[in-house]
Image (tube, rainbow, N blue to C red; front, side, top):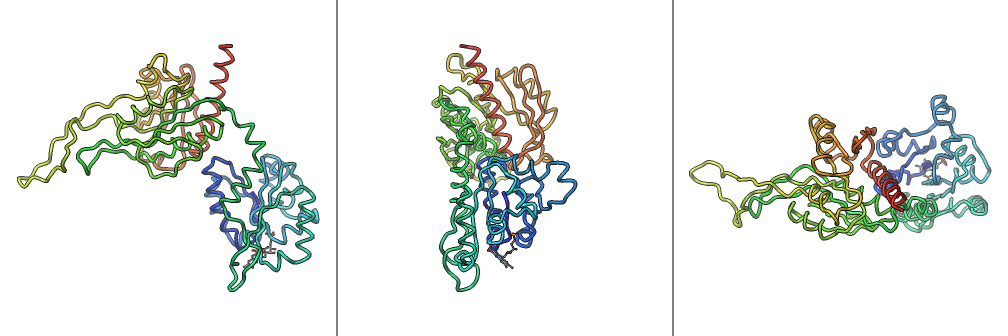
Length: 403
Ligand SMILES: Cc1cc2nc3c(=O)[nH]c(=O)nc-3n(C[C@H](O)[C@H](O)[C@H](O)COP(=O)(O)O)c2cc1C
């Protein structure tokens, strides 16, 4: 993405977040003027990547270079595209990193112009935009409405971020089709915590946010699968194109998972409570005037991963469990793989210091019966895409072997 120096540059922060939520990898070039409106620090914090600003940065040139930067992408999005950037593109300039990337790219280019209506309607801008459209550049917007300047209205606003995401995904559709590696498959995912009631107002819970499970469901849906997500209580938006079944307790989660079978692939990312209260009370437990605390008797919950991994004819062809550990992560995860009968375990360290529970990134190990792979820390969306990619390859290899 190239951010130009317009007042709408701040909207790019939201655009980056929306694209990342949908598991797109975003790398940003900012013009010198753009840095007057938003800082590379904020942009880098959202993309989780370095931000490129300078054509003549020796370090950058050695590492990735403006030519690779222009090719190592599926699309180049310019938002906001300023009148100045549009003019320099139309003239074939390459006097800064943004224009050099635009001139060198062999990928689709999508412009989202944003400027004052007089600038947009100026004959020079009209000529430049026509020229770029004839050159095959896609242009989305600008929209009509109020300007940042007081009492100004007209055509020139950056299109809404959701429309821009739509335009980017439409332009990417042929590329995205290549990623539809799970078409025709049913994928079952669990995510979030479970709540085990003590009485009508109290419950036992854990710190799972559901972000990893939701990212997995979204990645599987983008890969063309029919996806059922069995979700514990979380406060996340439902991923697009996913059937979400909301449950509260571990027992309900098991029932919903069994009802969703058969599936080709099952990924158990929920943090299911190991125990529940033996007899939850139907009335709120009162504080006793004599003092003292009630004794809570716990009983073991059903083991969802084990039940499904050992379910015989209804067992999904690939069963993946998550192991959340705070000590000896790998040793425990290897034990879990065997004990549960799962095909793979994704192990992560959930000690408070790791900041995984509730956070946006994850550092995981993929454990199979004969190998351990440790992946670098990445966003939960990226972890999800990578797991889905690997699972699809495994399912396809199994299918090829069976034929
Ligand atoms: C406060 C302020 C707001 C501006 N907003 C816009 C804008 O919305 N659209 C635009 O085309 N130019 C805008 N400009 C002018 C650009 O910043 C200027 O043309 C600059 O050279 C663009 O550089 P770039 O295209 O390399 O990012 C603005 C300038 C200022 C000072």
